Image 1 (cartoon, helix red, strand yellow):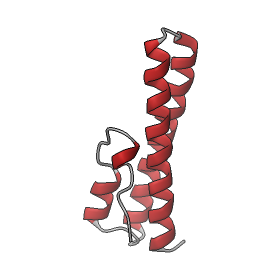
Image 2 (cartoon, one colour):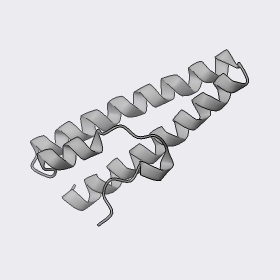
Image 3 (cartoon, one colour):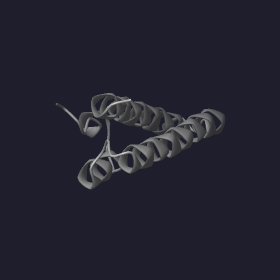
Image 4 (cartoon, helix red, strand yellow):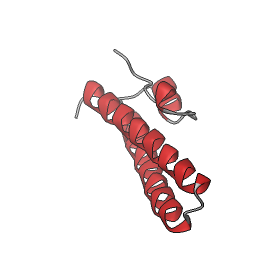
Length: 86
């Protein structure tokens, strides 16, 4: 895996997490606890995977410290999910 590929995967993971967050909020709005729990669990797993991928990329020299910080930065939705645009 090269730096470009890991950046693409991080962007996709962040978009997935943002989409899952929207689903969690939607389930909360209609008070559907089962759906909320399902998507919250998916979001938590995706966040853990993103963190692991970022740590491995940084360790392997594919991401700088700044890249890793950006990859793990908070996001409010899909509009700010993409951190690598090159």
